[in-house]
Length: 264
Image (tube, rainbow, N blue to C red; front, top):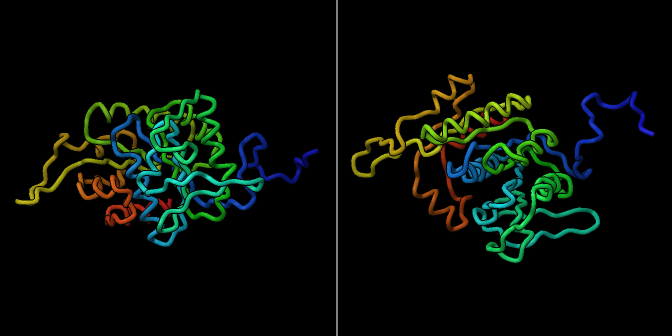
């Protein structure tokens, strides 16, 4: 019988609990209202720069149907586990990683699961993997406000979320849904990152806005949420990501972001 008198008041026996070896100081969920805004790349670069800054970092690829983290970090081996638990993959710089691509024979094998299996997989990545001690866990969420977002916000110890957007009006409208969902579920919002904000011409050094003027500042003011950064279009990042070399990217934007996140 459980001794309820001496329990931590935050203890909830119904919430999933990790392995005893797992100690995670901060868990940040990276979300977006829709796909195509570069959320997974932002997640990967946040983890990369956190690890480079000396924080032991892990990544849960929560996009079970459309996983991309294995490719970004050139991790292709299957997961290994025994009675003690599952061992995560480890990238070249030491980032610990779990993605659903590590559960199938090859990257092109589709995950043909229904909703309950998908949401349980995200919880299992948290509870069944031996993460050991991490300063930061980055949880790359699927787009939208569906089952996985509900499961994560209700069951995992999220420190806060970062919302990734891009300048288009349509994206800004859909991101508003993510903000409203987080507010209704009492999940702290660390801030907004606007991706694909601009690019700098190689020949004239002029700044161009291919998707129109920034909407990040408008969203920040509307919801009283910090605008953490406006990231440029950078072909080098795309090239390295395609080659599985995302850890080679160095960006002052993300160096600053990491310190902001770790202080949150």
